[in-house]
Length: 254
Image 1: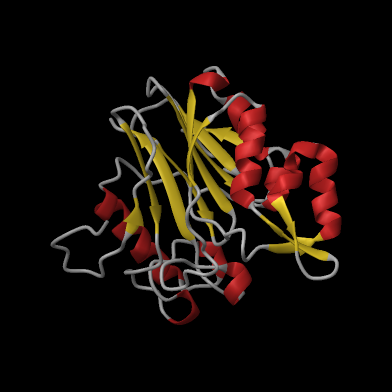
Image 2 (image 1 turned 90 degrees about the vertical axis):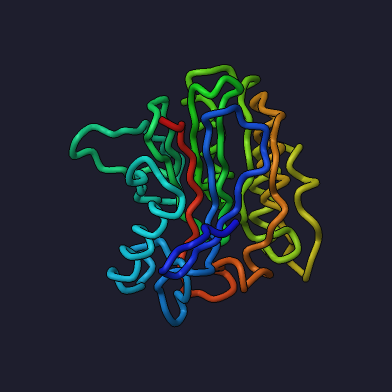
């Protein structure tokens, strides 16, 4: 959707197509609109990607205005790890994590991606929300499981939405990496398709669904975009190397 009647560059974002209860709000930004230039052209929200800080700060202000956010998102220092943090954090606490959750209305959880998979969580009663940054390392090491366990509700009450990530036709990995996933659980084997010699194609969306189902989370929506092939809509690290970052956000409306 596009925010109307703005005098500044108009950003676009995806609204999650999940059956979230009233009061749960979510969004996943696209690269269109914004102030960034060159390789970061558009709505880059990542300060760590090499873009001019002034442009990123302008984009973040535009994000808050466009989505009418209740506050500044909790921007994480992502490590491709499995740490989950509760927001709002204590004063001075470093936000070194790859997932965040909250039960506090008006607190915005966010992750940044450019091919990795962003996953939103909420419960059916709208009492908690979370977001996880799930690249292949996080998926392999358990970031989704850790997020499910961190939330103060049973897994059976959770809803998930899979945001834009590199699609199954573009994510080439080694056979050795496939074997690491399959060694974790043989249920993941169907998420890999043979490719060039020594390579295969991995489906991050399918991996996430299998791992979530193993935790008891079966209400999973989304997973229809490809950041790599949709260059006019999304940043992609694997496609471009030096590039910007999308943001995927979730919050409980105050």
